View 1: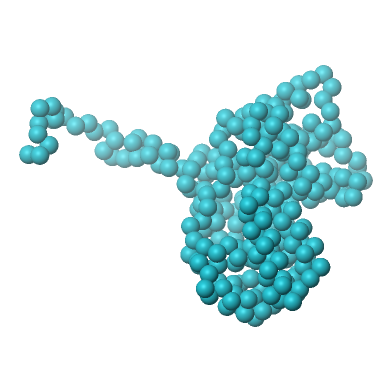
View 2: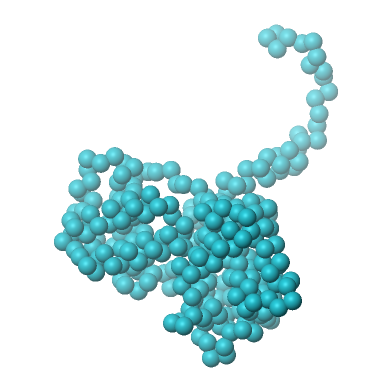
Amino acid sequence: MAGDIDLVDRFLEMMAAERGVAKNTIAAYRSDLIAASGTLDGHLVDADAKSLARLANGWGDLASSSVARKASALRRFYGFLHEEGHRKDNPSQSLPKPAQARPLPKILDKQEVDLLFETIEDRLSKPHPLPKDYRLSALVELLYGSGLRASELVALPRTSVMPDRPFIILLGKGSKERLVPISDRARHAVGAWQAFVPNDSRYLFPSRSGHISRIRLFQIIKALAAAAGLNPDKISPHVLRHAFATHLLAGGANLRALQAMLGHADIATTQIYTHVDSSRLVELVNKRHPLAKRTLTRSTAGTNPQQ
């Protein structure tokens, strides 16, 4: 069971750092995963689909919300194990999928994003900016400008962003390649940071042991939020990925194109971002509908609505 607990702790650490998951949810996930490990005699990490099906059979008397939470914890845990190379397969398909309303992602409005960039620009406008400020600029430009996952961003090779190439090719979840457009701003920011990256470095954002960790990235973004006068609890690398998606969609992006850029296997995952587009849809109806330019010519003054 010791091996289970170690990997559960690493998973929960990732969920807190990359996804900004609330402490209560982290505690509930830990309780669910440790309980599941106990039921499986300490073999949660290497459990097969049949073992998980038997585990789920013991949830028959639980409320659907509890079943959904337990299944979600396990599904995300095995996704983490697969992505990190601890397993070659993902056995969580055998878990139940009770109908639950999908929570809306945390989002930032454009004014809050502007505050983040203004803080960065203020640091870079000083006579002698620090190398870490150039790194911060490159990290945020790539997070918000391209919607990269935290795990994808920190592991970018040093030569992944080229000055004459407006895209990068990523190997994302499930070892699937996708092409991600890179803005001129992001390429410029990365170019400025690359001057500080050793030529023999394998990674664009190196550390002593390889590349910076997701936890370090999480800390960097939280510190930036605080410096910008924003609530650090509201902002994480994953929230900036959400902001990229919601603001791009609100600007008129095609849902299928957004799905490809984000690397979603199922467009249903991408469709969650359409909730932010309601104001734009109302505007479209008011401006583009054939009746939008027609006005009521008959006065209703003095009329009885009951007649």
